[in-house]
Image 1 (cartoon, one colour):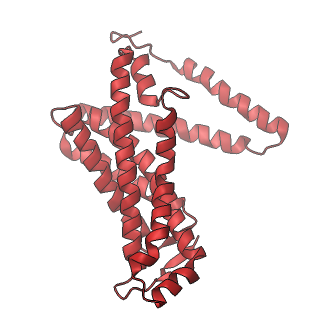
Image 2: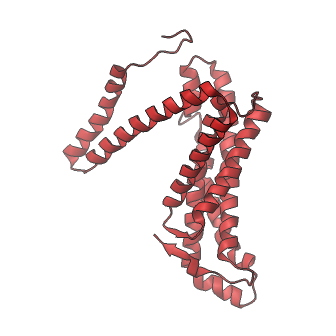
Image 3: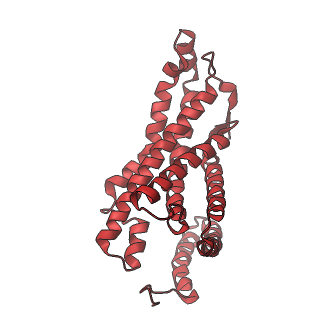
Length: 266
């Protein structure tokens, strides 16, 4: 235990924890699931990626300057936007750029609002607060964007004849796209709504658990977690709405025509 009261983990402790994954691998071998190689690869990537992030964050926390924080934030947003589009079954030209713009605006605006107005960090871009909060927003936001965009493009593909018939009979592009857009936004928000419904009862969120393990008062940890849940919900809803509207503007032109030729299946 160090001077802050946190029990430090050694390499041996991590090796013991790795044994839990080995058990899962043995189960895969015994049941012939064929997942042992993927488990091994995922475990190696987890260790390498998290250790790398740990060293990077230690350096940035030590520097504490705005350019370094912005650089890391941009890298996180780029990776998140590519991951969001990589999960959809359909896509279109410019989708990755739209996901980047959406995550950039919703991620930075939401995280800076929390650090500046709620937690009142000085400076508001303090990396020890901003980077973890941004990571939570991006992690949930990319899921919402993926589900929203995937649903919208599937709806426009499956209901293409219906949408084009409405347009041919004089409907505006918004009147024809309103149903698919609404369904897509609802789909994008379902995961965070479900999480909020059971938080604290079925599962203890990661940040709250981390603070408790670090010795924080449980009630104080709960207050932080409430802020985080509201922050993530706001960021995810804004992200889902934004990507749906951006995609709508891209796929319907000013002459109220569906640009179905832009949509392609992966």
